[in-house]
Structures are given as structure tokens and as C-alpha cells.
Length: 232
Image 1 (cartoon, helix red, strand yellow):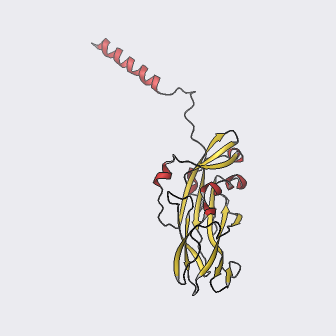
Image 2: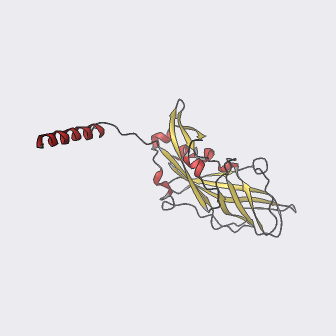
Image 3: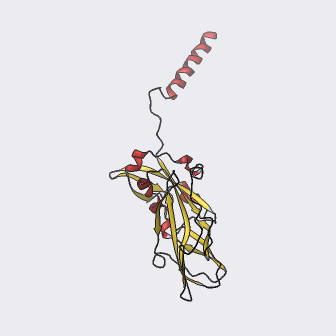
């Protein structure tokens, strides 16, 4: 009886040993990743300013920006400025996006009212590629109004006294950046970006309004180098 029990214990130990990976065996490696954090700028005092953001709906890849028109005039056109920076928090790039031709639905907001506009320049596949240029696996994109044309023919731009947005610093980039694992060498191989239609985040993302949101793109190899697979 005792001998039989010892034989069963020995057999079980052998089975466990076979299931566990050996000391020299490589565990599955997680794909390197880049995080992009999109934030509505604070400290804006222009006649039109950003008050909210939303990820794209499933039928469009264009994120939306909610704007508040505090002026007594209806807007005719609005330019959105994106300030992209890496982990060190320094402003690295300022991009202006052509408005009417690239923004479905137009950019007219009545006086003293709020409105949503779609912003093609905030597509994940466009933003993530700056990770290579800035040598950073986590990017912060600050969204602010750069220029407004009003219905009466007058204009306003950010050089006319708007307070500087709250630019990121090292602490700001801390929490969302925890999932950023791409190395400098991997960022140098980043060649292009695509949408990952199988991503769980693609199906589960919340399109409701927020002051900020972030997304993570995995870097996968192909013949051109590394491709950023983004959720939307």
C-alpha cells in the first residue's frame, strides 16, 4: 500500500516537471508597445476653446473635439492645433490641420454655444508614428484651438493673448505610460501604422466625452521593420 502511494507521488512529480518550463526555456515575449495620451488643453482664454474629447465611433476613425464658443458671433471655421511631446515633457512638434477639407460636418458653432467637430489629425495611426521621431515610447498630445474665423469676417488666433496650455511634465506622463514597453532600438524600426481590427479595445472603447483618453499600439514585425497596430 505504502509502496503504491509512493509510486503515485513520483508519477505526479514527473508530470508537474514536464508541464513547468525548463530554466533555459524562453517564455512567450510580449509585443513592444507605444502609448499615446490625448489631452484637452487647460488654461485657454480665447473665444473658442476645447472642453472635451471623444474617441471615434465604430463607423469612423476620426476622434471628436468638443468646443465652446463663448463669443457673441457664430464661427465660420476653426483650426485645431496639436502639441506632441515625449516623456521628457518638452514641446516637440506643433501641427496645424486644414479645417474644412478634412473635417466632416463642418466647423460652424453658433454664438454662446457648444459643438462637436471631427478631427482627422487625431487619428491613432497618424499620432503614433511620432514615437520614432521623438524617440519616446509614450506620447502626450495636447489639443488646443489655434485660429477661429467668424461669420462676420473677423478672425482670432492664438497669438492674440491666449494663455499657454498646460504642457506635460515628467509626472504627467507617469500613469498612462506604464504600458509603454518599446525600446529605443525598436522605435527606430517603426515604419508605419495600421488599424488592428481584431483588437479588444476596438470593440470595447468608450466614445463618450472625456478631458483625456489614451490608447496603446503594439509593434509587430514585417518586411519593412515594425508596424504599429492601433485600436482605432
